[in-house]
Structures are given as C-alpha cells and as structure tokens.
Image 1: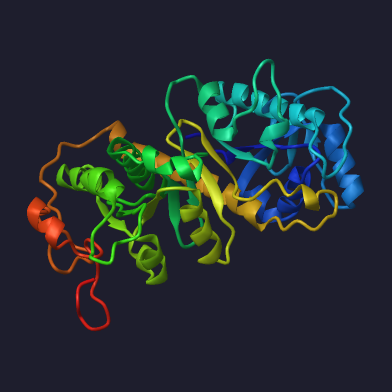
Image 2 (image 1 turned 45 degrees about the vertical axis):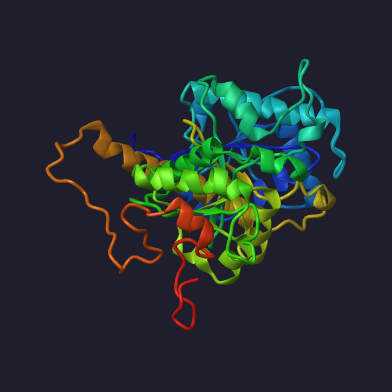
Length: 390
C-alpha cells in the first residue's frame, strides 16, 4: 500500500436531509483529518447553503477529481451543476436525484481505484427515481454497479453485537417459507467469512437463532427441524463454519448468551434490530461486506424531522468512518499471508474439550429417534445456576 492516508469517499445523501450537517460536524474534529483523507461527493452550492443555514463551521476545498484530494483538508468533488432547491425535511424527486448522482459518481471513481472506502450519508429510497427504475437501496445498487455478480451482506455492528438478518424486506407472514437450509448456510458462511476477513477473528463463533420459540416439551418447530438444525449440523460437521444453535431469541439475549459469540444470524427484521437498540447505548452502524468495496452507513432512519435544526449528533457517523477504515486495514492484513503462503507444516485441531463453552460433541450425535423424544431445550447450552444443562 502507498504511504498515504486512507481515502474515504462520502456521498452527501438526500440534499434535504442531515448529510452535510453530519459531515461538517464530524470533520470539525481535527483528529479526523489526521486519520483519513475525506472526499465528499456532492455539491459546493448545496454544502454552502447547509453551512450557512445551520450556522456551523464547514470549510472545504473544491476539487475536480478524486486524484486531486489533499491530505489534511475536507475535499468536495462536484457531482452535478444543476440548481437544486433545498427544502429541509422534505424528500423530493429533485433531492433524490441529487443523492443518486453522488452515488453514481462515487461508484465510477471506485472502479478506477480513486478511493479506498465509501461512507454513505442518509437518504430516502422512495424518492430516488432513475431512468425507468426505482432505487432499491444502497446494497442492491452497489452490487449492480460493481457488476461482478457478487452478493453483499449487511452486518449490523455496535459495541455488543454483530448481527445479520436471514431474510431481508420480507413480510412477517412470508418469513417461515423463506427460512431454508440453503439460506441459513449461505448467510452463516458469509458472516463467518466476514468476521475472519473484516474483523480479524481467526475462528469466529456464529450463533443461529430459531424462528419459533421452544415448545413446552422441549421440541422445536418445523423450520428448526427441517432447515436450521440440519444447516448448523452440516456446517459444523464439515468444519466450514463454527456454527451453533438454534437458540430461542428471548433466552439468548436475556441470559446474555450473545456475549459468547462473534456474530449472530437472526431470522427476520424485528428479531435482529430490537436487541441492537436495547442492549447497547452506543450507536449501531451498518457494514456492507462480501464485496470488493467496503461501505458503511448509519443504522437509523433518514432523520428528516431533524434536518436544518442543527441538533444531530455526529457520533454515529464518525463511528461509520472508523468502522470502514478498520475493515479496510483488516482486509489488507488478511490478504498479506495469502499473497505468499507458506507450506503448512501441521494440522490444526479443533478444541473439543470441556473447557470450550457451548462445546459440541465430536460427531454431533443427534440420534433421530432419541432427538424427537428427548431434545435438549437449548442445544449446546451452558449450565444454569443449579448446575443443570439448559
């Protein structure tokens, strides 16, 4: 890697929203410019309007290309010349179009290697209209723009949990049909790989939640028996993913079992986002992983109700930048030994001793007949206060 600071591209988001307020407040801290070289993809006129309306400091340097970005400065790259009316708090087709132009220019520059990571300011999907299409969201649009047929994975990250959803934008009544063995394995594997590559965890432990609560007789539902349990067994037995579960969500979070794992696979939206909000006072950030581009954004709504009021806390946006930089550096470290691998001189052995919490039997001896008659309430659980296995 060149001896230079990491270049962070920042799209300005919806121009009637809080993007410029977050950007200016974030880089009001001198330490941020020591950490990275920011490149705002946006509009100098709109940036100046926000700065004046909010009465905040926000000095920036206008550049004509990302290559001109200077260290120690807040660089702004104009993405369009159109006059765009700013109407704080009201998403419009015009403001959505301005957000899309910034993303398009950023993706073009990334394909040319002009920056290292992308941090996206909030926008509103519903008001972004292109030529014959409706904006599907950052993840889907970036996947299409990269054009390499790879699918990304959204990981919710805070100081307590790293969480992914098995289903995405699926109505609750359709979730059960969407829970399949193949999808559980796919999402668990993507999370496992992301934890190794992006978070520098050598052998991550992945917990898979159940869809249904545990029955009074200790039995699981159809989705657990036909999809989740077979998926977890297959991943573990084939030594592809250090996966455990299923775990009933209420017990898993209430008893603090999530602290024993590096990542969690939730089945649907509310099962994931409610614990994220309750278990940590720190803000949650979304990481788009599994793609060549490292992209982060806030886990929050677009906050239009706060636009133009100078009341936004930049802490979450700052954490999104930190996370993007950390992931970029971790990926570089992960790739270094793969570039010139040494011959393996020994075989790694799994630690299957009793010292390992949530330990798993060597062959995962789930006798089918016995399992139906006497399945433990929480597979691979830990002892309760009385010493009994849960």
